[in-house]
Amino acid sequence: MLLICPIAGSGRRLLPFTYSKPKAFLKIAGKRLIDHILIKLKNSFPQGTNVCFIVGYKKRQITEYLKKNHSDYFNIHFVEQKPLGYEADAPYFSGLGDAILLAKNLAENDDCFIFLSDRLPIEDYSQILLNFHQDICDSVINVKQVDNPQFYGVIELDKNGTVKNIIEKPEIPKSNYAVSGVYLFGMSITPRLFELLAEQSKIPLENGQEHHLTPVIQQLIEEGFKFKINEMQKEILDFGRPESLIAGNRLLLAEIKIQDPTYDKLFQSGNILDSKIVPPVFIGENTKITDSVIGPNISIGDNVVLDKCILSESVIGDGANLKKIISSESIIGDYSILEDLIKKSITIGDSSYITTSNMKSF
Image (cartoon, rainbow, N blue to C red; front, side, top):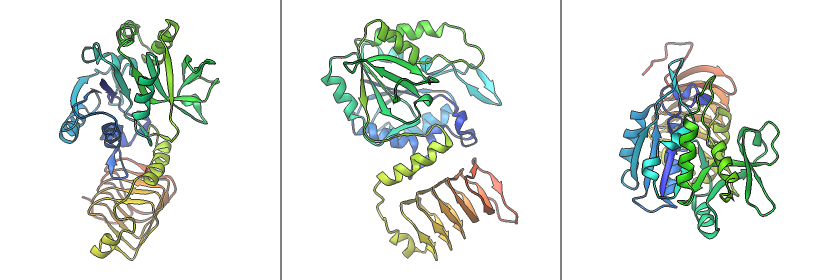
């Protein structure tokens, strides 16, 4: 089975954080998002499984990191998706459909497991594999019942539980089954899948249009291929927007097992002084916290300095330096410096500087 991960996009909905890194490199609960995803995949796929990453934006950063950190387990391949153009120096691409088409040569005569780089299931991926092998079908799509299906691809089922329609972000959804970041196509369907993707890729695009995967799946359904769903019972963490990043951080912290839940070693080492930690909180390496109240639901990166802060429900990037900050529901980029600020929902990118004094920069 070939695993395919489209990771070319610039993550414009997560600006300003994605100016300096791809969205899959956002760090939550001590690991980058792509690390959390690949750890889940290791629980479901054997060592040596082929993974094809469709790269584009920040391609060198992605390829070097994945080779260094995950090539010992996966057999990793990279294919580049060229941008259609640039908008404010950020590239834009022709869509998910065209990205998957680029994996055609690697996927020939094989099952294809497509996963998105901004969706993380709390469950692992083993159930979708089990459903595919137990049911006589050509494809299985991961779904989750959601309250806001208009933001997703939506699945409609017939009376036998087979997919009869898939619609991309419908204004009036007829179902609350949202596509949740994983598609499994059996080798019985992959030749036709890539034929249709190739035909779609020739259609001219204008005014920000993209070549989606959804209409190709709909055509496959109409041609008689059998699609089933795998309904996830636990949450699917969607990290595609800042507000969903905060919600995903909260759920992920609730799931992970922190080695030192009382932070005794950090208190004993002197890295936490005169402060209160309200779990769940993840604290990175070499982080110093003084005269502060931290938590609940905070992810703190490595080499962070927090002095006289009251923080909750937030994500703090590596190397950040915060002094006299009171905030919640905030996302602070790597190596940012903030001082003397009381504000909810602070959202600033990497290497930002907001201070009223001569606080030293890095």
